Each structure stands twice: as structure tokens, then as C-alpha cells.
Image (cartoon, rainbow, N blue to C red):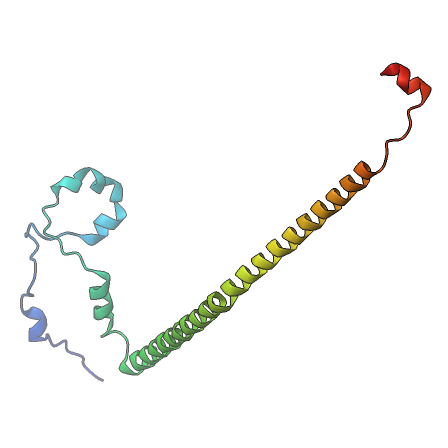
Length: 156
């Protein structure tokens, strides 16, 4: 028969560094989460002694949790995605520059020429209308007026 005997490790018998049970700085995080309505009234009591982690610090702390193989894969995917998007934006910007400058260089002179052509067509129409009106006026003045009927002469 095997007899088991418990052996205590010296590491566990030593006192741990950090806040002791009677320290004022010690805050029980479970009670903060479970009773958030009680803390609303005591927000002014906080002396700023608690440490606030930033998102960056939390991500750095996760570095130890993720194995190096997975970190390398995640880093490779992230840098590949970044490079792909950066190259796409770079090429897109160049293409947009080419299209916009081409449109300005070719489109503006074309639009001005089309506007001038439209003005010329309108001027020709006006000139033809004036010539037609003047020729009609000349024909009317060259003809003798029609004779008045006896009824029309009485009215005048």
C-alpha cells in the first residue's frame, strides 16, 4: 500500500508582496463590479490611488498570453493587410490625380469651345431672324396698301 504525505513548499509559506489585508489601498474588484450603483455616490471619495491601464498597456500584457508562433502569424497577416491597403491607396491616389488632371486639361478647353460654338449658333439665328424681319418690312412698305372697303372708310 502507498502512503501519501503532503509536503509544503517554502514558497507558499512566505508572505507575498503587495497589499496586505488591512491596507487602505486594497480594493475588492468583485464588489466594484457587482455593486456599481453603490459606487456612483462615492465617486468623489477616490483619491486617484488606483491605477488605470491604457489599451496599449493591456495589449502589451497580452503578449505573454499568445504563443510566439501565433503572434508571428498575426503580425504577418496584419502587416500584409496594411501593405496591401497602403499600396491600394497609393495607386488609387495616383489614378485619381491622372484622371482629374486629364479632365481639367482636356475638359475645360472643350467646354469653352462648346460654349463659344453655342454662342455663334445663337448669333447666327438672331442675324437670320433680323434679316427675315427686315426683308418682310421692306416688302410691306413697297406694296401699296389694300383699298379700303366702303364700310371701313366710314369707321375711320
